[in-house]
Amino acid sequence: MEIVWRHGRTTANEIHEQLPDAPSYSAVRALLAVLVTKGHLRHERDGKRYIYLPVASPEKAGKSALRRLLSTFFNNSPADLVATLLDPKETDDAELARIKAMLNERKK
Image 1 (cartoon, one colour):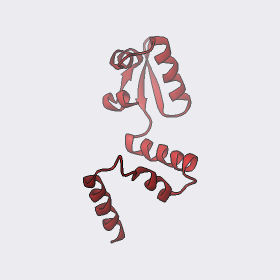
Image 2 (cartoon, helix red, strand yellow):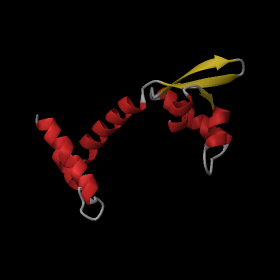
Image 3 (cartoon, one colour):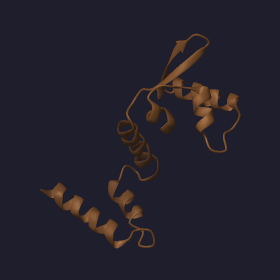
């Protein structure tokens, strides 16, 4: 999806060329077909090839994925999600200060 978002319009071959440790071209095409079926991508025919385009922006897709993550793993509790993210071993003081500032802004 990142490649499609970056280019806006792209082919399976262009995606395949940009993937590090790319699977086979057939596997890339199969994955693109799944993303089209699930509604994440759409395609237009250009001669013998398809041009793939994103359906949603990265921000909209991210919010949707986060909602699914929240419901699947955190019982729809943002507090439980945040508690997991605030593991002291993985969150430095600068990041905590940034989070605190966002929460203070949200309160206003």
